[in-house]
Length: 565
Image (cartoon, rainbow, N blue to C red; front, side, top):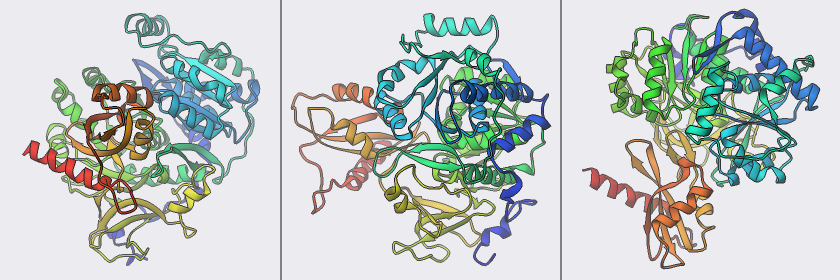
């Protein structure tokens, strides 16, 4: 087999070629083992409040009791979680999974249009939403199947008087909680109190049962729910866990969780892999507040950190970061977008720790390749395939290419999703009957089994690790009555990797870039909004009238390079 898998010869010491997926029957089993094994250890910290594994166990049981005993949700029902990194998230997450309920992770920054699509598409019957975002829910909930709403404030689990103070400041001083009306909503703490009277039902879970509907854009532009089963998640947690396990100490790790847990990278790598080792997840609610983030780092005595290139770059450019104590830091993992050489080299210089790049997709739960953690320096590669995973490079007619050949990156393994929720045609486009997943990324493999991304999904734009699909942006822009035609492309940006640029043909000659940006503000969440708008008399098209985004992108990049040069 190893002839086909040259990477096995270059695996870090102690990493097996295969994992035993039968180690755990479900994600719930993993979580319950951690609750027992590390009962008195700290599990999650946020704003100075720490909850132990034992406390998370009790609270998540109460939440499961509420979902099943009070509001009557059953195995296979869907619950949406719409929160940044706060203590309520892991409690709701583990409570739902223990009850066999499918978690629909929901970006709290979604606009009403985006939220409506996800709630309608998933058929979620319940939602937990942070007060700051409840107004968006109020706008759309009537048209969805959501019957049960649980609201919570950032300070609700921080204890008295701190929690009350945090909630007061956010609402009345910083004005970060728009007024909303959801008359049937129940407060999170009340739900826990009610749930305490109900035992958690014994739910039989297998690898085939769904754990998450993890929404991802698609080349069609409309977000689709990747069906990630308990088996997919267990597999990826074991794959990534064996990879990082060699240089971690059970019960002693402190991982900085700055990427939102609703993002698959953070969910699996931080939320599950480190939980299984009894680590402490130090939750950063607002990593955009870089000075505040650096303060948290100074207080945490952290040993590990995951992030995207923009996060590492932001930290390196924040005053005070260089004075943080890095003596315990032994693992920095970058994913979600390409890690830039300059950032990786500077990171190593400042922290003494190699920034190892990993590669994955929502559809692969997410890890497919990771660099060895004992790398001495940045190598420009996405790493080696993780255990029990086959990765190959295929030609356009689906034939495997030899070493060095450039083609589409293909992935096969137990972490590959079950398909897209209720979209068999979309599933068939990317997932063959033989189990190979088309990633859409263009790559090559060297003779040692290291993979390199050469080019990205043809039109996708990657902003700070978030996928932006031009179709979705264009569909939103076309809703403006003053727009005749539009093309969205990604242009390089030193802060976020890429930003969205629009090329627009006007229907209304008086339409301004400012007015169009203001319109997009209501249609699209922050990272999808255009930063640059250029008006044109016409757009380049193919002989069948398809707008040629690639031409526009090449032109935009040439302009950017000229300006930089």
